[in-house]
Amino acid sequence: MNIIIIEDEHLDVKRISELIKKFNPEINILAKIQSVKKAVEWFGENPEPDLAFMDIQLGDGLSFDIFEQIKITCPIIFTTAYDEYALKAFKVNSIDYLLKPFDFEELAEAINKFNNRTGTKRKNSSAQNAQIEQVINMLSEKYKERFTVKIGEHIKLVSVADILCFYSREKASYIFTKEKRNYLLDFSLDKLETLINPNIFFRVNRKFIINIHAVKDIIAYSNSRLKINIQDFTEDEIIVSREKVSRFKEWLEQ
Image (cartoon, rainbow, N blue to C red; front, side):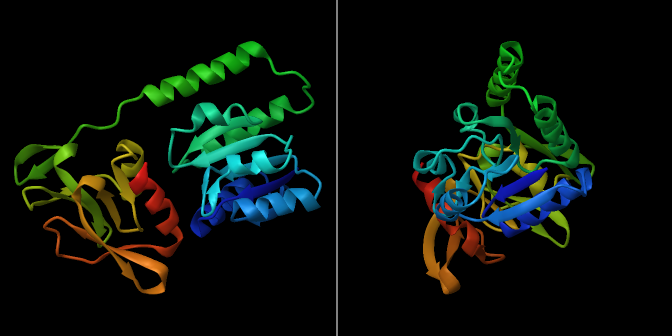
């Protein structure tokens, strides 16, 4: 099987590649592409792969822009941190839609779904309806509204609306609140990304997830990065990593 990966995050490319090889070491990864422009060029110059993994939000646009510029008929497994494009994805050759961070079992299930459809010229309508129903259910799931934190022998409820940012330090995760308090959490930042509303919270780098309503100032920083000032938070600098700057700006304007 020949596969391509269209993804602009280096760490995500590495992880997806590792999971694919874990699923089947004989799978051939033909190309790893980082932008809409490069994807259009690649499809224009090469035979289509058997399957493509596509991140939806790329540095120079949405992967849906690729379909507007060139005809693609190969099946697609979309990978993204956002669920707002799920229904649109099913209109363009989509086999599955994986929300980051996904694990090996989810990737394996998606590839098996592709394998089960190989050689089938017409989609089974009942299976397609089941897929769409699954996506609708996924979109209707509620994000967490509160977290429990332990203070000595006491348990405190913290509303998500009161959280200015999540951050990691020394392999532990914390929240910083409007009350200028820091609380230890039992979740990793990777897990937190799946529990909170991506329209409100954005992971600017490996260490920080910020609340859009807490942003006081955005400053141009070295190496094409951005520095974020969060209300009352002074413990660490918050820097938007270079590879996330474009996506961060889109998030601010949505």
